Image 1 (cartoon, helix red, strand yellow):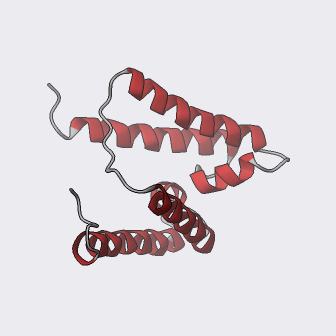
Image 2 (spheres, one colour):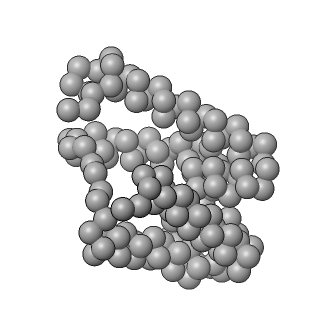
Length: 141
């Protein structure tokens, strides 16, 4: 059996490798929110965006076929949709997402990405605290 942290280490290396290869080949940052926006627009780079996003889906399918364990807590659809809208709003306001700022931006030593990533993390910690301790029934079952 693998040491407990090895799958996380391998996953992190693969994410970094994918972001590096994408940047080396296209000159673009592998920020998923920007790639998703680019996939919906006509113009240069659209095919790169679509292929990268299809690769993300393919990786999930391969992991599923390999019987990788995924865990999800049951939540009402309205809550998931609301969370998705808030994440989309946050990526728009923040000028990118966790992959663009947290993976690619920090690797490029971007101060803007450092501030964005610290903001993401603080917001996530506050959300977990509020949902888990202050909202009735919001904690982990």
